[in-house]
Image (cartoon, rainbow, N blue to C red; front, top):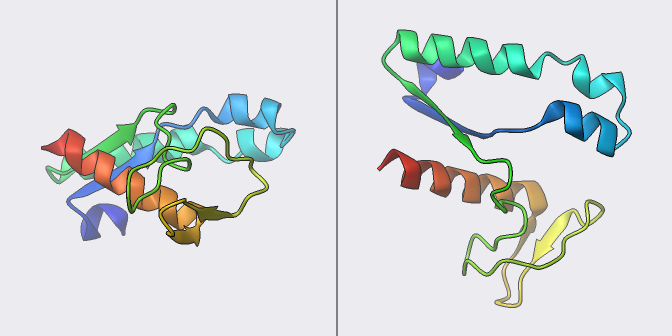
Length: 109
């Protein structure tokens, strides 16, 4: 569905093995076949002349305000709502997804 619906898909280049060890997720993260999913997605997109763009895993997508661009020095995983000094407030993941999309568009251009 993704490859048929979109001309370009942008995602973070996540280190799932590192995440499983650092966050004590164990096999639940390693067994989800993330690498296989991204490989198949890239294949299906390229087959149709479309693109998969991976954003560097160190890009501060969660710590950057999608409204003003200010980057927070610290943001713990337990903070599920992003709040910026500019007054912008959003779900942490929604804020990060906006930043990932913008970075993907920047790399595409």
